[in-house]
Image 1 (cartoon, rainbow, N blue to C red):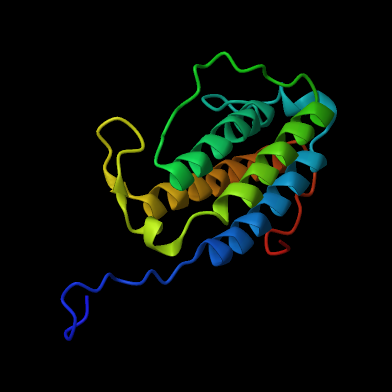
Image 2: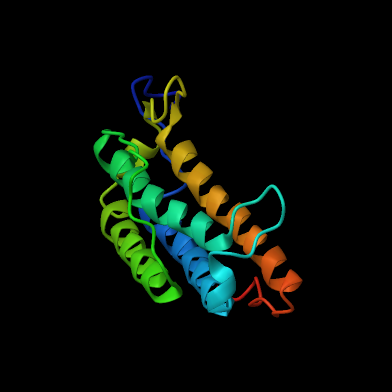
Amino acid sequence: MSDTDPTAQPTPVLTSEILLKHWLGHRRLTRRVIRAFPEEALFKHRIPGMRPFGVIVHELNVFLPLVVEGAATGEWRWPAGDEDAPSGKAELLTKFDAATRTLETLLQTVPAPRFLEVDHPMGNREEPVVATLLYFLDNEVHHRGQGYAYLRQLGVEPPAFYQR
């Protein structure tokens, strides 16, 4: 709000272009983590209490397009849980790339003022659109960290985290 114009709307610091560039850096790194996995370990290797990395990435692939679509349209929908899971690394990467293309296409359609609009993306959760987007970006980073732990446990050197 402006002291001189009480009707002025706040200007978000984060724009769709800035967020997209940052998120794509994370997507490139997550893709390299997927590629580093031995095929046989991607959907089978796990630490007790955690899911295999391929299963986690499949979930990211399902949710990302829905989140960006919700941010762009205000229509939030969530998966039914019957989405076909990939059977191997090549198929997982194909779906990962498709989700990334959706991010590239839809995120840039979100105008900056929309980031500050309060929405109800999940159940009773009420928050600005940017908070929902950042939550899902943080979720990808968190799960990629699990992938790093798995790779180290498998004796595979993970990609450098700072090379996005």
